[in-house]
Length: 222
Length: 222
Picture (cartoon, one colour):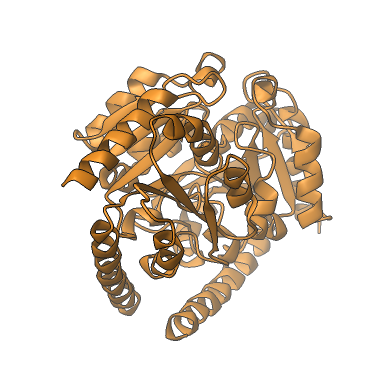
């Protein structure tokens, strides 16, 4: 009981800082997404694949990477010519609003930024509870994972606005049923907008990037 | 700072209960493994695949399943004729020793049990810190995940005695380099014993099951 009260306090404080982040980001007209998934679902690959599409549209964007250790992902994204900042969480299994607040000075250093992609630590549980101040949470699941994931990790699917079913190129070699995955996801959250992508074949990447670009442009106009 | 102290207290209390679990399980001569991975790496499929092999050897075994919600995994295992108990963790992203202690009465109800497999919640971070009282932690990673996972989630690989590289049948369709994954894993933990398995082709499953059986038999003799 004691433990639960402490957790509620931590979450309440997180929500306060998230609200401040949201206000600051909105002030600058930056549309922000919080990209979550289990480890290895392909979040970084998706960002890499989208990079060229977003540049073509064009949308000005930057990436904040959350990982336990190292800066492997930030380096991968930078190699695509995208500004990237690495946050290392140490032992924490998720980003929190406080960590993100420290990245905002760097974010705001990029004049005219329209889209900020925050790539969370690979985890299907705790990121659901930690608002970062984003406009939309996007869950990525891969066809190598099992189409029952929405039923087993419902909180993250409920907290998300968008779902990306990634690695569709692998589906023929697995027991993953994309129709069933869609049904399971919509059972948990009927409002989910769902995209299907493959970073290997490029399937769906342009559509997803274009949709994010539209959201970002709409935010800037509002 | 306050937050860290509370976490240390929780972990210290967990370690105490884990030690009690370990003593109780050892008293009964039950070899216990704590199976961890990211969501969808194939822990439950691996248990299903091993079930027939373990019965042939024969090894008497049971499974405790940890999930946020539902009893999908326990039902899957039971359909293979294996006794299974489901623990639901609610919002918690990992099993803890206290939850496992409550399952021991059920475990000890199975006379002559030699091997207990505890399947943890899918998470590559927090299970590393929560000792359950097991003899060995086993990490499962799939070839769909990326061969850099040991470098990005080092704690779980350091805490593990064994590593299973699963879904080897998918490797030809991904950028996963099994040699590099082995190197990365051994860089983080040089003592890791590594198996390669595919639940679709059956590759390596018998070897892995036999190895666990030998560990269980050795424990019983000791």
